[in-house]
Length: 242
Image (tube, rainbow, N blue to C red):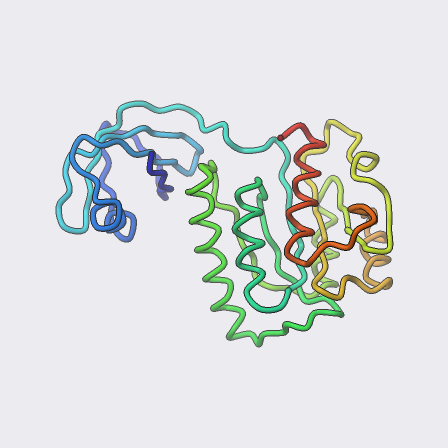
């Protein structure tokens, strides 16, 4: 069933879909009257709807049923991702959204080869947010994870103080995630992943001094686009979200 996010709560038995979603329903999916789709509201209510009419750039649906959307993990994970080369960030965002990430903070670390200027970063963020939206629709999330503005590594380390736990994955070794995430009351986790060159020791020290813990993903060195998916999968498993 097609899955869409809307920007307001539904209070009546009918709802009118406008804009790009309406065009997608009518021109791409070619849906007809009587077919069903799902709308997810800002308060995470999953509304099963039936197409009532399609008129130009608007689609009117009848609301059949409502229920809370329980597709979200019970731990809020933020990815602090050092910018990789090429279009790898597109892949990282898409797959991390599918796996349950809640927020993505792109950052520039010391060993980043990719260093777009401010204008390019604005365009990239817009594209990344669209990728997050599409991945959230495909994986039937209750939210669309936010892709934040790109920040410096220092600023990212400062932001982690709001998390219950912060983990920086470091190729030179560290604790296992199993030993770090032992408290069942942990609700917010930050995870740092490096670019192709990894992190410098001074960056690891900065995160550790801010309350974080260095962690290992095993003896093998993972590619920049593989590491965040492996790390997030481990966190989701350890917090009983797999």
